[in-house]
Amino acid sequence: MNGAGGEALAQIFRRLIASHGPISLSHYMGESNARYYAAKDPFGTAGDFITAPEISQMFGELIGLWLADMWIRAGREDLVHYVELGPGRGTLARDALGAMRRYGLEPQVHFVETSTELKDIQLAAVPGAIWHHDLSTVPLYGPVLLVANEFLDALPVRQLVKTPHGWRERMVGLEEDRFVPVAGSQPMDAAVPEARRDAPDGTIIETCPGAAAVVYEVAGRLVEQGGAALFIDYGHDQLRDGSTVQAVHQHRKVDPFAMPGTADLTAHVDFATLGPIAQSRGCRWLGTVPQGRFLRTLGIEARTEALAARAPQHTAALEAARDRLIGEGQMGLLFKVMGLAAPGWPEAAGF
Image (cartoon, rainbow, N blue to C red; front, side, top):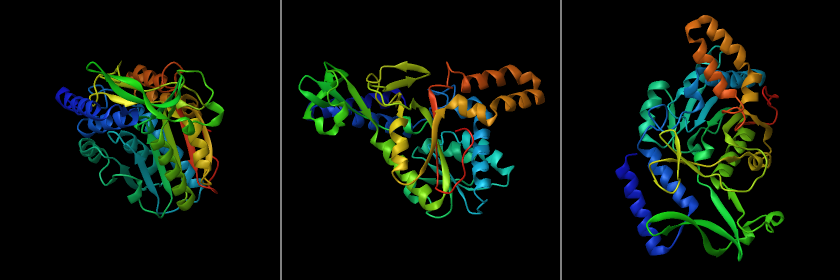
């Protein structure tokens, strides 16, 4: 999104706030990301951030092998769907599908994507994919093998803040001409779990209704149709307080309130809440583990050595990519992998 587009959105927000008062943080974040993703390719070195599939083909290959292993041990059903939420440039799908093919798994491919800009890039990477605006149009028959990599973190969050007058929704208002977080006027105590209501003033509780809805729907699909799912994102697996909203522009963190529509707004995924939501539908929660541990268990170190043996000139780059994916100070610990599976599907590697 160019600066002019961002400025246009900022002006819309300013008029809205001037006329009706502060807007919710979820409204601000949702509109900003819709504008941001609709008209640009944000991925890669020329974009604003790099995701795991762009770092190394090994990431997508290991995801594909995990899905193929689950499918084989579940009985090799013929009609099976590979579904990816927010498939980026199609890199993960391309690498995963290549690995699956080696084991006789050739699923129908479904991409849940709203960006017209990215659809053209995805089509080049994965010809034959079928696009959907949301999960509702994905077929209701046949097992689902679903992957969502760095998808949930971009969904709008809602924040509640404890004030001297009780709990309020955290909104976005104007201070002179700048966007700033402010406490809303409506009491929100009823929306706070009773065990957390007596928190000190200034405490922020962050929730993501969109992430909860997606996991609820995917879990229901798995129970009805069979299958397995991986949600991979940065986040936490223990309940915690505080705001995690951040903005990334050209690979640097920037003020999330400075450039609406021009930067990627994200928040840490609350995996501690999502596992029980899946279980509430009768779905199996396989676990939530650090990405580094998951990829090591799947054999990323042996895969690195095998690729380096075939192309010794790329050894340093392969090892750097591996370390970025599994290193505790890089993506290995902050990023988590949550696995779900249908009742009756097998136990899973990596958990």
